[in-house]
Length: 526
Image (cartoon, rainbow, N blue to C red):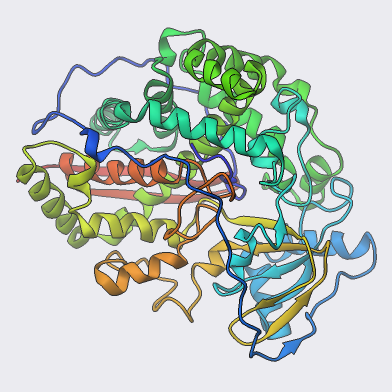
């Protein structure tokens, strides 16, 4: 349950219909029961606020930040068309790095006019400068979750939910404590409910492969993700409620209305821009769906709402925050991360698949056939594959912060003065593929984080709104559910290679994002 992560700002939503039927699985997997011992429970205690040490004075030359914003209105529109249509996002940044010979520069970020009044940002594109966005002594995070604009609070029940709060605001600490409480209360349900939900996913893929010769991964994966979250965190099976199988479709529409100014639908560029960035889509488009989701969470989270009242949060505000944390942060993150993990693993080929299967099955057998957190800690290659997936294609692509004071930002080559009130923006896929930090930075290197030297690189894996080597607290904006995301990502890889020797996939690029199709699942043979 990632409370402060923008789950998929770059992912184009896929408006697909839900599956027509969902039958609970009666088949049990071969090897083991599933347990999580008390000693292995994830740490969700509330650590003290992070104390940031004052840096030494820079020894790098201080330079003026290159770049400019162009003429008012005209400059932001020009940059927006480059970003979405003329160049595309990655080339938009690459071309400016080449032009200015700097990974720090000034530019405009979408959506700009007429959605956002001030699109001017200082761009950070290297792994040394990017982490300043996590330092809440230097940057403010108030209302910056989606960048230079904020969606209407009508989409969140009239409340500014946790993701839009700065740690300096009183409700930030209360709401983050509530999420820590929720995760701790439901920790024993994570492993068994993941197994149940993803067994249903894999059985569905197998059936579709048997009848059609291939199986679309996206829609079944979305349904499995929501079912898992509902069952594990709330003890409710959506199919037994009024939501039925419709929650992923409802959430996709709700997300799209919030984030549409950051999307492209693949239409002719002037029409696309006119539809998505002239005026915001009205919240009324998803009011009925949102109410159904709210009713589901309100009915399913009584014990969490009781705790909310105890610490001074109304049941209504708490419920809107639980809905957002589950549907936007957690489900949205899994919807982006899981297909991409399968994509990278599938592309890596049979040699890696065999190594993962051997490691995972050997460890599980030596642990009595049980999937436990302690057992997964004994799988260095599996853990590295998860971290490498998060590094090469992080689910949190865009980060923003507003300078609280004048300070100096350092890149690898120079230092730059930033003034109080300036907006700072970081594009994480460039920071986590910084060639001055990672060898073969553009490649998926499965064993990159294996061993002592590999583990030292974890501080440069930044997907969670903070370094992988640090932990969330009430005093920072790192995801409350960071450990949960790592756990479920590991579980996906473990379940996949306990069940199969290898997987083959096809990836198609569409205007609505990558479409993943499974073409082969070779069942476990050893």
